[in-house]
Image 1 (cartoon, helix red, strand yellow):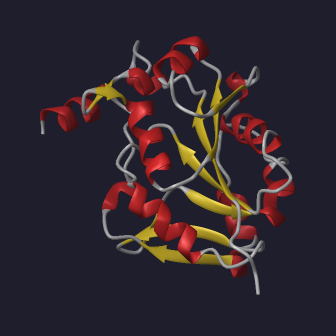
Image 2 (cartoon, one colour; image 1 turned 90 degrees about the horizontal axis):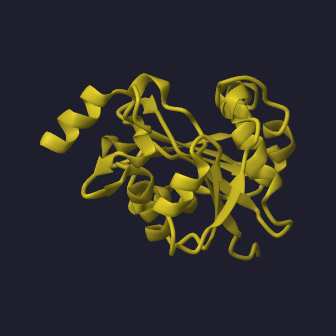
Length: 198
């Protein structure tokens, strides 16, 4: 019988958030705290203990915003070369005991701890790719089994791992979510202002 898998998390917090204008959206106010802190809180609420936060743009400010949390900070010196470089940096920082990793985008604070727990509950073996789905639409975060860590480290450019998901479509487990947090991020100041107003 398989023992309980060891699940880690990578929080990607290295981007420049250029569409937000002059502010770093990860440091913008969200429910009274920096957006990235809200995102991290949900990862911790899911019960994940091994958390790696990848920083790059304004790394010192991001790390200061998360001071006091039990996380490991890893700096991506190549963050200007795109999202894939941060993903690679995070994967390389994981321990050998990790069976799977939740890849969390720092600008998705509406993903709940319960959402992440549902993903973990759907994880069956090392060859799983668990993708959250809301009303037929795939979102984030994605939980990757160890079998795909090498493939994730071969990604290039400013994009995520959608191509890898398509390549291994037979291994994808879609996990239905109860809310739309898994398909909502905040790319512009207008979107963020509307959320805070509400």
